[in-house]
Image (cartoon, rainbow, N blue to C red; front, side, top):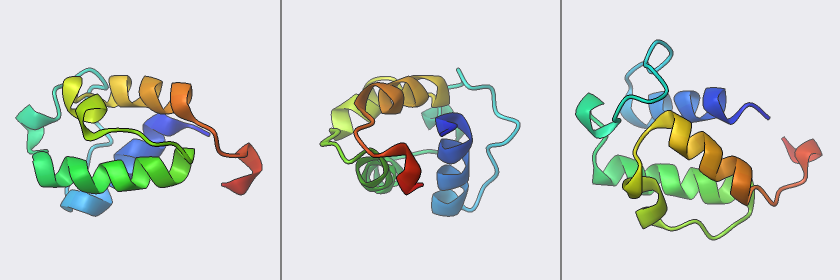
Length: 82
């Protein structure tokens, strides 16, 4: 699964904004993502990876690149489930 694309689509669905052109290393907070958006994103991330990610893990490095790496490391889901 391409987590970069998945994250961009989830952020768009949560915020109503587009993230397709945003640099993967851009700070998402500086681009309008706030704590409630991150809480909603956390729920999606936990569901897709079948793991117990924490809010602090997303908030620590709020970039698409960091979140992609985090999801890749914590992905316990069967790849065929997507």
